[in-house]
Amino acid sequence: MVIYLKAGGELRSKLQPDVDHFTRRVETEAGKPLSDILIGIGISPAFVAFAFKDGQLKRLDYTPSEGDIITLQPPVSGG
Image (cartoon, rainbow, N blue to C red; front, side, top):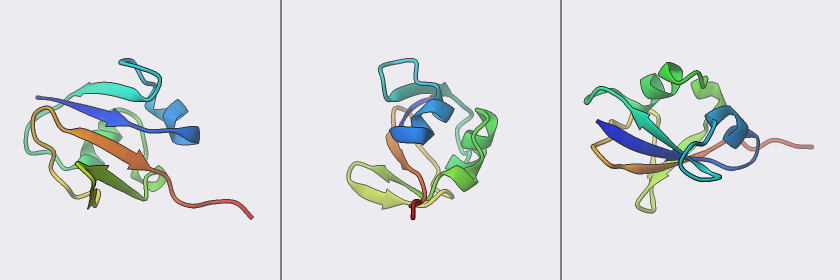
């Protein structure tokens, strides 16, 4: 199955986009939670606070479906 992950800022460099400046196409097995998909592409789930799909907040235990476009949000940082 194919999904698309989007990210900006520091998280974008970890994502290594290949579709456009913010988006990476990911082939994965159906039924895997987002956290496992992230680990599979070399991103620690600790770098992702939450995700959005179709404007809805999703946790990292969300199981994507074919063709999903998911935007990843990093934890808030700064000082």
